[in-house]
Length: 69
Image (cartoon, rainbow, N blue to C red):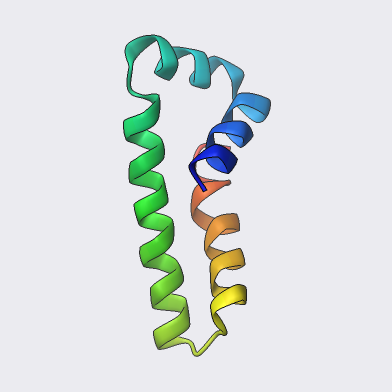
């Protein structure tokens, strides 16, 4: 998941990606976003009854890929 998040940022938010990379914060922020995505997927699965694949896809779209877009 980290590579997907970083690739998305690199492609769609190149300035932010370069700034985070230069400052050494890229990996930490990507880890944090990945953790938030996992937690949101777990919530969607448990509380809304979504199957794990759908919950994961929705969480990736909502949290990881749109957070800084």
